[in-house]
Length: 143
Length: 143
Length: 143
Image (tube, rainbow over all chains, first blue to last red; front, side, top):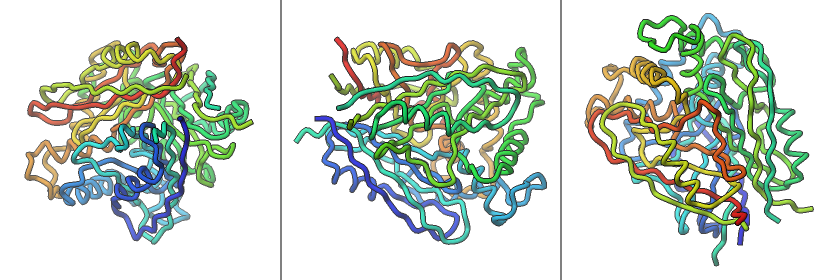
């Protein structure tokens, strides 16, 4: 039978970094009891985003962070939007370069990810933030 | 009952800029009468794209535009594909850095977007263009 | 009737380049017999990715390749993750700048792509690789 499951996920962040959320997503998939379907993850913000990346060596995440900091510098003469802090406009830009939504497949009760793939919230702001994600599965419950 | 709804959206663009399409998308969601489901938005072009970004301060969009213009310059010695104008190859590259598709969730008759999130068509070409988007919802009609 | 179809697609790659997979995807859509629905394509790796780009002039793909090579150089002083070769960290970064998943619409037995849109596997590593993609359709079979 086709059905749907929704859940809000709140994540407190503490500065510009990558936060692994794979376990929280897998727990939701298990709770949903949906065996085969589509998982859509939406982050409801424009200065934090989502990526899928290597989960084996934490240095990969550090290098990604440093790459984006260098690619989108805080002090660009052309920025007009400065009112919310010098890290705010780079945060918006980094969001557009990565993802606001991720769409994954669930097959035989398993979220389909490669062996080395982890799901990350990419926080682009420096100050503490409360981030909200919507997790949504549409699929078949075979029980 | 699970059902689907499709609609083509035509947008006339007038140069390299961000065009807010949130209202048009919300109107389609309302017309579809689908209460819970997945919305997939596809832009059927390779020199314009889609992003979700801040809808409060228009300066954010100007800064995004300027960032991408600087990141992907028009005059790069290595460009081979020059036949369609000097803004064409940068347009293709900017499309790959952003999105050709956006996948969002509809819950309780509401498209799930954060308070500050708007949906934008990102036109990368300079000349006037007719852009076509396919809007598609798959979900449950609870009426 | 709503139904689902899954298929694994294996692609052998041979160096840093764009590989057109449009025909393989279209064949899966045809085999699925699903007339209207959502196609989700996932690449199960973090050093190769997916893009939709122009399929008419192969020079576009060469220029995209060169742009990304220049944007994400192999020799950056700040890279910590070096153990898997100098092309590995750039590969991870290029993956975050493009897509791990693509979500497309199927309408009236046709995968909805623009006239000039092709689907590409973007291989970022130099050595030969075996890449696995999961193809997944959720939709209605009208037969």
